[in-house]
Length: 356
Image (cartoon, rainbow, N blue to C red; front, side):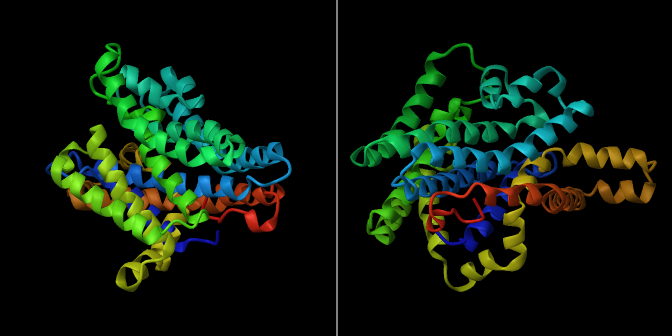
Protein backbone atom coordinates (compact mmCIF):
# COMPACT_ATOMS: atom_id res chain seq x y z
CA UNK A 1 0.00 0.00 0.00
CA UNK A 2 1.48 3.29 -1.12
CA UNK A 3 0.53 6.72 0.07
CA UNK A 4 -3.01 7.23 -1.23
CA UNK A 5 -3.10 10.98 -1.75
CA UNK A 6 -6.73 11.25 -2.81
CA UNK A 7 -7.91 9.65 0.41
CA UNK A 8 -6.50 12.67 2.23
CA UNK A 9 -8.62 14.89 0.01
CA UNK A 10 -11.62 12.75 0.83
CA UNK A 11 -10.84 13.11 4.54
CA UNK A 12 -10.76 16.88 4.14
CA UNK A 13 -14.20 16.86 2.51
CA UNK A 14 -15.54 14.55 5.21
CA UNK A 15 -14.45 16.73 8.11
CA UNK A 16 -15.77 19.79 6.27
CA UNK A 17 -19.18 18.10 5.96
CA UNK A 18 -19.27 17.33 9.69
CA UNK A 19 -18.11 20.82 10.67
CA UNK A 20 -20.64 22.49 8.35
CA UNK A 21 -23.42 20.42 9.88
CA UNK A 22 -22.44 21.50 13.40
CA UNK A 23 -21.70 25.15 12.65
CA UNK A 24 -24.52 26.03 10.28
CA UNK A 25 -27.47 24.58 12.18
CA UNK A 26 -28.19 27.83 14.09
CA UNK A 27 -28.05 30.26 11.17
CA UNK A 28 -29.10 28.41 8.02
CA UNK A 29 -32.22 26.37 7.17
CA UNK A 30 -31.90 22.70 8.01
CA UNK A 31 -30.74 20.68 5.02
CA UNK A 32 -32.41 17.46 3.95
CA UNK A 33 -28.94 16.11 3.20
CA UNK A 34 -27.34 14.63 6.36
CA UNK A 35 -23.89 16.15 5.92
CA UNK A 36 -22.56 14.99 9.29
CA UNK A 37 -23.70 11.42 8.60
CA UNK A 38 -21.96 11.41 5.22
CA UNK A 39 -18.76 12.77 6.74
CA UNK A 40 -18.58 10.32 9.62
CA UNK A 41 -19.58 7.33 7.48
CA UNK A 42 -16.87 8.22 4.96
CA UNK A 43 -14.31 8.26 7.77
CA UNK A 44 -15.53 4.81 8.85
CA UNK A 45 -15.25 3.35 5.34
CA UNK A 46 -11.73 4.78 4.91
CA UNK A 47 -10.72 3.43 8.32
CA UNK A 48 -12.08 -0.03 7.58
CA UNK A 49 -10.27 -0.04 4.24
CA UNK A 50 -6.85 1.05 5.53
CA UNK A 51 -6.85 -0.83 8.84
CA UNK A 52 -8.03 -4.11 7.30
CA UNK A 53 -5.45 -3.73 4.55
CA UNK A 54 -2.67 -3.35 7.11
CA UNK A 55 -3.85 -6.42 9.01
CA UNK A 56 -4.27 -8.58 5.91
CA UNK A 57 -0.81 -7.61 4.71
CA UNK A 58 0.63 -8.93 7.97
CA UNK A 59 -1.36 -12.14 8.42
CA UNK A 60 1.50 -14.22 7.10
CA UNK A 61 4.03 -12.91 9.64
CA UNK A 62 5.72 -15.56 11.75
CA UNK A 63 4.77 -13.83 15.00
CA UNK A 64 1.13 -12.79 15.08
CA UNK A 65 1.56 -11.43 18.58
CA UNK A 66 4.27 -9.09 17.24
CA UNK A 67 1.87 -7.85 14.57
CA UNK A 68 -0.71 -7.04 17.24
CA UNK A 69 1.87 -5.38 19.45
CA UNK A 70 3.08 -3.15 16.60
CA UNK A 71 -0.47 -2.38 15.50
CA UNK A 72 -1.63 -1.27 18.94
CA UNK A 73 1.56 0.71 19.57
CA UNK A 74 1.13 2.61 16.32
CA UNK A 75 -2.56 3.27 17.01
CA UNK A 76 -1.65 4.49 20.50
CA UNK A 77 0.87 6.98 19.13
CA UNK A 78 -1.50 8.30 16.49
CA UNK A 79 -4.73 8.57 18.47
CA UNK A 80 -4.25 8.81 22.23
CA UNK A 81 -1.99 11.88 22.70
CA UNK A 82 -4.25 14.45 21.01
CA UNK A 83 -7.46 12.88 22.30
CA UNK A 84 -6.39 12.85 25.94
CA UNK A 85 -4.76 16.28 25.67
CA UNK A 86 -8.03 17.68 24.32
CA UNK A 87 -10.04 15.94 27.02
CA UNK A 88 -7.71 17.32 29.71
CA UNK A 89 -7.98 20.88 28.37
CA UNK A 90 -11.77 20.54 28.13
CA UNK A 91 -11.82 19.37 31.75
CA UNK A 92 -9.66 22.30 32.92
CA UNK A 93 -11.95 24.83 31.20
CA UNK A 94 -15.15 22.98 32.16
CA UNK A 95 -16.34 22.53 28.58
CA UNK A 96 -19.85 21.14 28.45
CA UNK A 97 -20.48 18.39 30.96
CA UNK A 98 -16.93 17.03 30.87
CA UNK A 99 -16.39 17.42 34.62
CA UNK A 100 -19.23 14.94 35.25
CA UNK A 101 -18.65 12.61 32.29
CA UNK A 102 -14.88 12.61 31.69
CA UNK A 103 -14.47 8.97 32.70
CA UNK A 104 -16.88 7.87 29.96
CA UNK A 105 -14.80 9.70 27.38
CA UNK A 106 -11.47 8.66 28.86
CA UNK A 107 -12.48 5.01 28.58
CA UNK A 108 -13.73 5.50 25.00
CA UNK A 109 -17.34 4.84 25.97
CA UNK A 110 -18.70 8.20 24.84
CA UNK A 111 -21.02 6.50 22.37
CA UNK A 112 -22.52 4.29 25.07
CA UNK A 113 -23.05 7.32 27.33
CA UNK A 114 -24.78 9.31 24.57
CA UNK A 115 -26.97 6.34 23.70
CA UNK A 116 -28.16 6.15 27.32
CA UNK A 117 -28.22 9.82 28.33
CA UNK A 118 -28.46 11.84 25.08
CA UNK A 119 -26.14 14.30 23.32
CA UNK A 120 -23.79 16.50 25.34
CA UNK A 121 -23.06 19.56 23.19
CA UNK A 122 -19.39 20.19 22.51
CA UNK A 123 -18.42 16.59 23.28
CA UNK A 124 -21.03 14.98 21.02
CA UNK A 125 -18.56 14.23 18.22
CA UNK A 126 -16.54 12.02 20.57
CA UNK A 127 -18.99 9.18 19.85
CA UNK A 128 -17.32 8.36 16.54
CA UNK A 129 -13.86 8.37 18.13
CA UNK A 130 -15.14 5.81 20.65
CA UNK A 131 -16.50 3.67 17.80
CA UNK A 132 -13.13 3.74 16.03
CA UNK A 133 -11.23 2.74 19.16
CA UNK A 134 -13.63 -0.11 19.93
CA UNK A 135 -13.21 -1.29 16.34
CA UNK A 136 -9.42 -1.24 16.72
CA UNK A 137 -9.67 -3.42 19.82
CA UNK A 138 -11.52 -6.40 18.36
CA UNK A 139 -11.10 -6.28 14.56
CA UNK A 140 -7.35 -7.08 14.49
CA UNK A 141 -8.00 -10.26 16.47
CA UNK A 142 -10.40 -11.47 13.76
CA UNK A 143 -8.28 -10.44 10.79
CA UNK A 144 -5.07 -11.91 12.21
CA UNK A 145 -6.27 -15.13 13.84
CA UNK A 146 -9.28 -16.27 11.80
CA UNK A 147 -8.56 -18.96 9.18
CA UNK A 148 -8.29 -17.50 5.71
CA UNK A 149 -11.51 -19.15 4.51
CA UNK A 150 -13.44 -17.41 7.31
CA UNK A 151 -12.33 -13.85 6.57
CA UNK A 152 -14.80 -13.01 3.81
CA UNK A 153 -17.79 -14.54 5.65
CA UNK A 154 -16.80 -12.61 8.79
CA UNK A 155 -16.67 -9.33 6.86
CA UNK A 156 -20.01 -9.96 5.12
CA UNK A 157 -21.68 -10.98 8.38
CA UNK A 158 -20.41 -7.82 10.10
CA UNK A 159 -21.97 -5.70 7.34
CA UNK A 160 -25.27 -7.58 7.44
CA UNK A 161 -25.61 -7.69 11.20
CA UNK A 162 -25.16 -3.93 11.67
CA UNK A 163 -28.65 -2.82 10.53
CA UNK A 164 -30.25 -5.70 12.44
CA UNK A 165 -28.39 -4.82 15.65
CA UNK A 166 -29.38 -1.17 15.40
CA UNK A 167 -33.04 -2.03 14.78
CA UNK A 168 -33.15 -4.39 17.75
CA UNK A 169 -31.41 -1.96 20.11
CA UNK A 170 -33.68 0.91 19.13
CA UNK A 171 -36.88 -1.14 19.28
CA UNK A 172 -36.41 -3.29 22.35
CA UNK A 173 -34.17 -1.38 24.74
CA UNK A 174 -36.43 1.09 26.58
CA UNK A 175 -33.67 2.71 28.63
CA UNK A 176 -31.89 4.55 25.85
CA UNK A 177 -32.22 8.25 25.13
CA UNK A 178 -34.89 9.07 22.52
CA UNK A 179 -32.54 11.74 21.13
CA UNK A 180 -29.91 9.25 20.00
CA UNK A 181 -30.15 6.28 17.67
CA UNK A 182 -28.37 3.01 18.39
CA UNK A 183 -26.21 3.85 15.38
CA UNK A 184 -23.74 5.40 17.81
CA UNK A 185 -22.96 1.89 19.12
CA UNK A 186 -20.01 0.21 17.44
CA UNK A 187 -21.80 -2.92 16.11
CA UNK A 188 -24.27 -0.64 14.30
CA UNK A 189 -21.37 1.05 12.49
CA UNK A 190 -19.93 -2.19 11.14
CA UNK A 191 -21.81 -1.71 7.87
CA UNK A 192 -19.50 1.22 7.03
CA UNK A 193 -16.36 -0.21 8.66
CA UNK A 194 -17.09 -3.60 7.10
CA UNK A 195 -17.62 -2.00 3.68
CA UNK A 196 -14.10 -0.65 3.83
CA UNK A 197 -12.85 -4.07 5.00
CA UNK A 198 -14.60 -5.72 2.05
CA UNK A 199 -12.78 -3.41 -0.35
CA UNK A 200 -9.42 -4.17 1.28
CA UNK A 201 -10.09 -7.92 1.13
CA UNK A 202 -11.17 -7.70 -2.50
CA UNK A 203 -8.06 -5.80 -3.55
CA UNK A 204 -5.81 -8.45 -2.00
CA UNK A 205 -7.75 -11.38 -3.43
CA UNK A 206 -7.93 -10.06 -6.97
CA UNK A 207 -11.66 -9.42 -7.07
CA UNK A 208 -12.84 -7.51 -10.15
CA UNK A 209 -12.74 -4.37 -8.03
CA UNK A 210 -13.87 -1.81 -10.58
CA UNK A 211 -16.98 -3.81 -11.30
CA UNK A 212 -17.56 -4.50 -7.61
CA UNK A 213 -17.21 -0.82 -6.72
CA UNK A 214 -19.50 0.19 -9.58
CA UNK A 215 -22.07 -2.36 -8.48
CA UNK A 216 -21.91 -1.02 -4.92
CA UNK A 217 -22.43 2.51 -6.19
CA UNK A 218 -25.42 1.52 -8.33
CA UNK A 219 -27.05 -0.53 -5.57
CA UNK A 220 -26.48 2.28 -3.09
CA UNK A 221 -27.92 4.88 -5.47
CA UNK A 222 -31.00 2.74 -6.03
CA UNK A 223 -31.41 2.27 -2.27
CA UNK A 224 -31.12 6.01 -1.58
CA UNK A 225 -33.59 6.72 -4.38
CA UNK A 226 -36.08 4.31 -2.80
CA UNK A 227 -35.60 5.36 0.83
CA UNK A 228 -34.44 8.92 0.36
CA UNK A 229 -31.59 10.82 2.01
CA UNK A 230 -33.93 11.84 4.80
CA UNK A 231 -33.75 8.26 6.08
CA UNK A 232 -29.96 8.12 6.07
CA UNK A 233 -29.97 7.70 9.85
CA UNK A 234 -32.16 4.63 9.53
CA UNK A 235 -30.41 1.27 9.11
CA UNK A 236 -31.44 0.36 5.56
CA UNK A 237 -31.03 3.85 4.17
CA UNK A 238 -27.59 4.12 5.70
CA UNK A 239 -26.52 0.74 4.34
CA UNK A 240 -27.39 2.04 0.89
CA UNK A 241 -25.38 5.17 1.66
CA UNK A 242 -22.41 3.03 2.68
CA UNK A 243 -22.52 1.23 -0.66
CA UNK A 244 -22.12 4.58 -2.42
CA UNK A 245 -19.30 5.53 -0.06
CA UNK A 246 -17.62 2.18 -0.78
CA UNK A 247 -17.53 3.09 -4.46
CA UNK A 248 -16.27 6.58 -3.58
CA UNK A 249 -13.47 5.39 -1.31
CA UNK A 250 -12.27 2.71 -3.73
CA UNK A 251 -12.34 5.18 -6.61
CA UNK A 252 -10.30 7.68 -4.60
CA UNK A 253 -7.85 4.95 -3.54
CA UNK A 254 -7.48 3.92 -7.20
CA UNK A 255 -7.24 7.56 -8.25
CA UNK A 256 -9.92 9.69 -9.86
CA UNK A 257 -8.83 11.29 -13.09
CA UNK A 258 -9.61 14.74 -14.43
CA UNK A 259 -10.88 17.66 -12.32
CA UNK A 260 -12.06 15.43 -9.45
CA UNK A 261 -8.65 13.80 -9.13
CA UNK A 262 -6.88 17.14 -9.35
CA UNK A 263 -9.13 18.62 -6.65
CA UNK A 264 -8.62 15.71 -4.23
CA UNK A 265 -4.84 15.78 -4.79
CA UNK A 266 -4.29 19.53 -4.72
CA UNK A 267 -1.95 20.68 -1.91
CA UNK A 268 -4.57 22.47 0.25
CA UNK A 269 -6.89 19.44 0.26
CA UNK A 270 -3.97 17.12 0.85
CA UNK A 271 -2.78 19.19 3.81
CA UNK A 272 -6.25 19.44 5.37
CA UNK A 273 -6.53 15.67 5.02
CA UNK A 274 -3.25 15.19 6.87
CA UNK A 275 -4.46 17.27 9.81
CA UNK A 276 -8.06 16.00 9.62
CA UNK A 277 -7.84 14.18 12.96
CA UNK A 278 -7.06 17.45 14.71
CA UNK A 279 -9.70 19.28 12.68
CA UNK A 280 -12.32 16.78 13.73
CA UNK A 281 -11.46 16.83 17.43
CA UNK A 282 -11.18 20.63 17.64
CA UNK A 283 -14.01 21.85 15.40
CA UNK A 284 -16.84 21.41 17.90
CA UNK A 285 -15.04 23.61 20.43
CA UNK A 286 -14.58 26.49 17.95
CA UNK A 287 -17.85 28.21 18.90
CA UNK A 288 -16.99 28.56 22.58
CA UNK A 289 -13.34 29.46 21.85
CA UNK A 290 -14.40 32.30 19.54
CA UNK A 291 -16.89 33.57 22.12
CA UNK A 292 -14.16 33.50 24.81
CA UNK A 293 -11.76 35.42 22.57
CA UNK A 294 -14.36 38.14 22.00
CA UNK A 295 -14.83 38.52 25.73
CA UNK A 296 -11.08 38.58 26.27
CA UNK A 297 -10.65 41.49 23.85
CA UNK A 298 -13.64 43.43 25.17
CA UNK A 299 -16.14 42.70 22.37
CA UNK A 300 -15.09 45.51 19.96
CA UNK A 301 -18.26 46.80 18.24
CA UNK A 302 -16.99 46.45 14.68
CA UNK A 303 -15.76 42.89 15.36
CA UNK A 304 -19.08 41.89 16.93
CA UNK A 305 -20.93 43.37 13.94
CA UNK A 306 -18.89 41.29 11.53
CA UNK A 307 -19.07 38.24 13.79
CA UNK A 308 -22.88 38.37 13.74
CA UNK A 309 -22.91 37.79 9.98
CA UNK A 310 -23.45 33.98 9.73
CA UNK A 311 -21.07 33.37 6.82
CA UNK A 312 -18.27 35.38 8.43
CA UNK A 313 -18.86 33.63 11.74
CA UNK A 314 -18.47 30.22 10.11
CA UNK A 315 -15.33 31.44 8.35
CA UNK A 316 -14.00 32.50 11.77
CA UNK A 317 -14.76 29.03 13.15
CA UNK A 318 -13.02 27.44 10.16
CA UNK A 319 -9.94 29.67 10.42
CA UNK A 320 -9.60 29.03 14.14
CA UNK A 321 -10.05 25.28 13.74
CA UNK A 322 -7.53 25.03 10.91
CA UNK A 323 -5.02 27.18 12.78
CA UNK A 324 -5.24 25.15 15.99
CA UNK A 325 -5.18 21.83 14.11
CA UNK A 326 -2.10 22.93 12.13
CA UNK A 327 -0.30 23.94 15.35
CA UNK A 328 -1.30 20.63 16.92
CA UNK A 329 -0.03 18.65 13.92
CA UNK A 330 3.35 20.32 13.59
CA UNK A 331 4.09 20.92 17.27
CA UNK A 332 2.49 17.90 18.92
CA UNK A 333 1.05 15.13 16.74
CA UNK A 334 3.69 14.81 14.04
CA UNK A 335 6.69 14.49 16.41
CA UNK A 336 4.84 11.77 18.32
CA UNK A 337 3.61 10.16 15.11
CA UNK A 338 7.20 9.93 13.86
CA UNK A 339 7.90 7.51 16.72
CA UNK A 340 5.92 4.92 14.77
CA UNK A 341 9.15 4.13 12.91
CA UNK A 342 10.26 2.39 16.11
CA UNK A 343 7.35 -0.04 15.72
CA UNK A 344 7.62 -1.33 12.14
CA UNK A 345 5.44 -4.14 10.90
CA UNK A 346 7.19 -7.38 9.93
CA UNK A 347 8.71 -6.64 6.51
CA UNK A 348 9.10 -3.20 5.03
CA UNK A 349 6.61 -3.99 2.27
CA UNK A 350 3.86 -4.38 4.85
CA UNK A 351 4.35 -0.94 6.38
CA UNK A 352 1.06 0.98 6.14
CA UNK A 353 0.66 4.27 4.30
CA UNK A 354 1.41 7.41 6.26
CA UNK A 355 -2.24 8.53 6.05
CA UNK A 356 -3.35 5.70 8.34
